[in-house]
Length: 112
Image 1 (tube, one colour):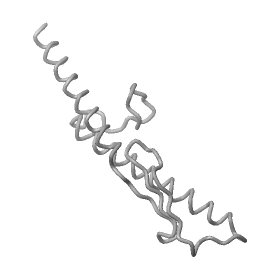
Image 2 (image 1 turned 180 degrees about the horizontal axis):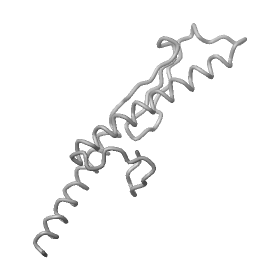
Image 3 (image 1 turned 60 degrees about the vertical axis):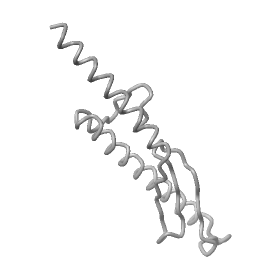
Image 4 (image 1 turned 180 degrees about the vertical axis):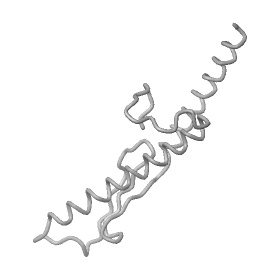
């Protein structure tokens, strides 16, 4: 029985190291989302931090700021959704599908 627990503990530690490696890799990824046919582009990393917002000057209309706000919001939301999907995919690979969807489960240090 003890041997089985040691093996399980070693597997858990290996999985934890792999998750930490993936989290570091994700933090270095640049993932985009866009709106308005690419007129507004948001760039985030895999840790879901916004890195850049690019706005084509043609879409800037002082008389319609609300449209620009909507485009920025849509681009950021798309980029964050893309980052979340990428993170979930990478974590599923690392955990062998044991944890494919974290849903509302919170694991300390894991921000998915």
